[in-house]
Image (cartoon, rainbow, N blue to C red; front, side, top):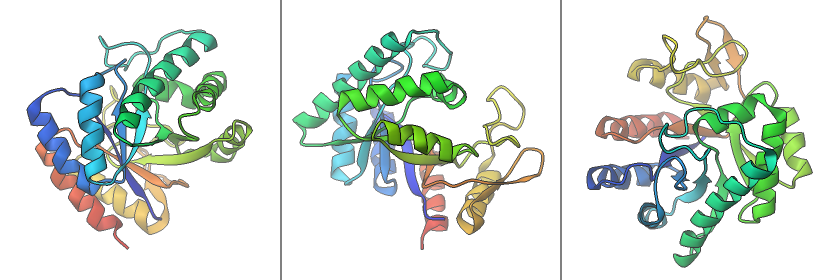
Length: 244
């Protein structure tokens, strides 16, 4: 399985974190940049975009529910109209900053609770896809690779969108293909478990679920995290595993 590395960036506005992100950027393929509603601001968007441009990394908008207090990790009830407006505002904000730097937005990856909610709610997923199509900023959506990938592809086709299908390096999976909730024991893999999961994905496109069962996943991108110095070393190890 060939997997592009994607990473959530532009979420912490301090010099130490920007230094870490500058070290992460050369090792990834796709940078998911926060758009201000769960983290980040116009200044941080600009700095992160320039780091991506320097390393020739494709950039995507990483919008969320309007919820900085909870870092976008709590579900919110919004009408489809309000959610679409919220998403188009965030995508447009990043697109404007990107355009000023001669950078194109390649895709959208929703953040946190919005990402999780859209994976289980077809109406919500429909609103997300409609917002991306209406924004005209890009024509690709990143969502989780599951057993319903064929259905999601049909939905995306109706909006003229392409899909990045994502798997996770450091998250445990349930038997139905969803991620083990963060609050549950075993949800986050340690370094050894993470590298083993990446090797298994590379070798035969599968993960071993939290119950010990083999789960096949059709994906083209792997999510890694780069918010601390140890993560930079792990990304280098992951990249070595995925090398042809």
